[in-house]
Length: 381
Image (cartoon, rainbow, N blue to C red; front, side, top):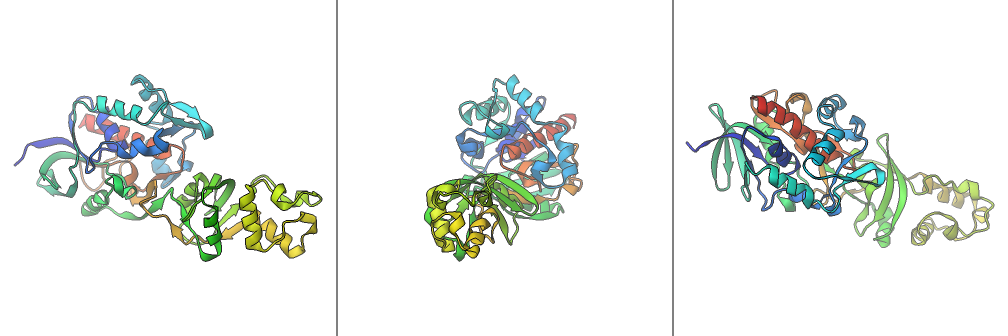
């Protein structure tokens, strides 16, 4: 038999690297199928890495709020910021109360490289299968077989397959009897129906909106693209959308009926990019005149910009999604250790679990929080 590993970590992403960084008395081997550790971290936040948020609560996540709260209370955003400061990184607070790396994501990766110096990171080591051999976990990779006393699955979801994402985390969980909540792309753009094909002619233009979906309000900008719609508000909305209609307020905080006596033309009056206004006027077959001169039916069409409803045709898919929603049922995970309730010494971290955060640093915070909780358990074992 090959040399037995004390702790094997599958995935050198945010949660896997954080866990390795927190291990003090024990060494770990980290398996990464991609050619680079932390590849997804490096591109997150437009290369600036949105590490966390000033306000982090279970309400910012899709998942079991009690489980989420138990984990976050053990290592919240303030604990994370303190840990980063101790290691020479002081994130900067930017718009919407989001914390970013001061210069680039590589600053965070530099910390992970230093703190994982005692661990072994095996790159281009794609894990194909994981089983149990007697009291050890048998880890089959595309270049060999390894055995470990403790196994941590930090392999992420299905998003960003170009950076090595795969389903090994879900396959492993199922092998050991775990339930998988159906997965779907999240924090991703929407494709549109034929009636909204005119959106594509506006590619590259953004406008502020409020989107209502499944009882949730998502504020921010909407970006028209050649495939449909994207932008922060849309990405947030995709977290809650399953199928059916969404409602978009293209005029948040502005009410057309308050301007019935205005002598300005609609294309000048509405607080939207002119190209967007003209596209809607054409789609609604409304003349570009003053609101007071519109026919009753045309006025109703114009006012529908406050509650424009349509059913997205779908999403841009996993290839464009920032995260994967769904995953391993958290009812089967111990929130005090991140250990499986079905298999001793088997742990699951981060995105592979059925917990997904909104846009704004919540998913990285979740990755770091679960890693911290797991590290305390592993240190004791």
